[in-house]
Length: 158
Image (cartoon, rainbow, N blue to C red; front, side, top):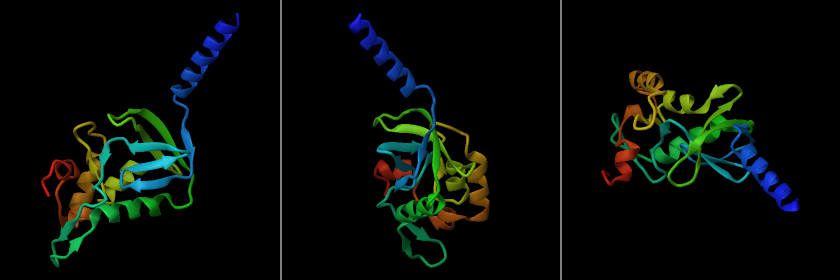
């Protein structure tokens, strides 16, 4: 009887972990597309931001810009002292939680792409293509610079 109760409790815990309950709280920024809430590393679903060490080049001045760092700073400013609410969409190959996150009802991924500090990660989702087109048209963020897409930069196209 005790064994059955322990098993049932374990099943309930597993169900609760995957029931779609939002993860909410203050977030720490890891980089332009990854945050952490209550010890859970969360990769923003559908976007890809430049890596922390990635640089871009200003089209106007030729200045080398740490666009990966600027992307993370933009995300930190966006989240500021607000509570972030994330809805899990799965796990990535590194075991991070994939999620759509919002601050005061505003989609964080959409905001990052619209500001030009992340790209629509079309390999996995086409959700943020309209925001990417807005950013490109406005020469916002990275679109005002010469840059390598983050997925190509990680492959060594630096």
